[in-house]
Length: 203
Image (cartoon, one colour):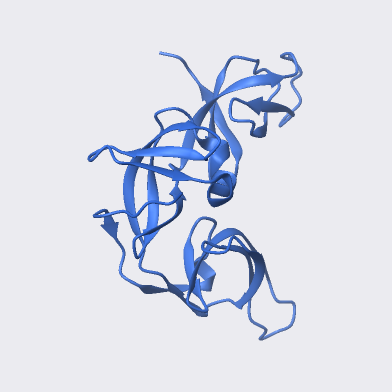
């Protein structure tokens, strides 16, 4: 179930350079809002050839995921989206529930609507709901969140530079962490790239 939003922060429609595209941005294609899921750039090998920007995008209305290619430097329309601050509450059979921190109105988004963002949601996390023309499109996460390690190999004193191991975090997200970390510790994770940033010291 999606609920309409009122108020919030509004961004007038604009044009985005394809060279500035990054994960999480919203663009407008064929009249629909699409969220960028990932971006790769191919440097041309021939003299005079243009940079090619390839983006995996998700249609906010249909859920369809497509690969799109753009010429570097071209302009793409950005939809008129609003952001509203909310707090993550809980998950149930209907989806993930959020509450407006000012009005206490609650909203629910499905796992499909949230996509990879669901791997970063913890109780009482403050984040933004993104909406267009009264329709909730998705969420905007903080740049980083702190999560607890729930499963990983025992700590190791190996000193090899850059050695890591897989760790499962409290939300089910799996990231590579340094060998010395152990279960129960908290780590800071980059929500844009899904990578470990640092150990979080308690207190």
